[in-house]
Image (cartoon, rainbow, N blue to C red; front, side):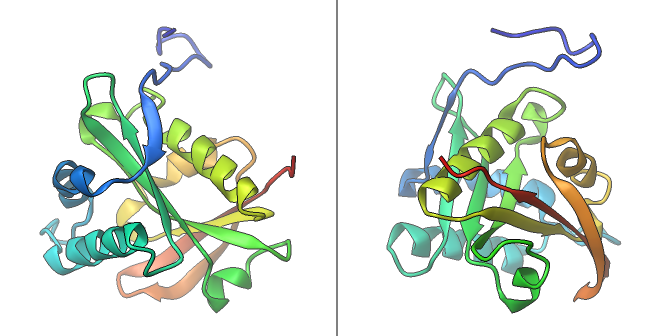
Length: 186
């Protein structure tokens, strides 16, 4: 079911599938990552950072790290976006309000699928379910200055997420905003 985005409070509903990442998803994810992982001043691609994210995704599939990645797949089999979950480092843990937080990482949706089509929010909703199933009690996340225009508003609109502090020295290019959401255990 879809609704007209022009009506206040109504967004389109994503009708594809959200599932765990598979190795064959990487070639479709790479251009999505390359769209967003760019220098905030020059807008130049940051290939080393793209490669680091892809390596982390591959290692998660091989059980070599603590990360879990989900992908949104359209009805036509096209990969539309991804989001990850990991144990937070000590700094991110310091922003948690509960004793078992998880950190949302690497949330990227193809440019064509952004803007209220439901892909990003569906990915996050499914990630929250994964977190609860793994015994996490909270989601924490941060977003650096390069995503201020493209991502911060998205996190502000997610149900239950609250802005926390700004972290001044998390990224070289400026402060990062922190959000958190306490999860309901089932």
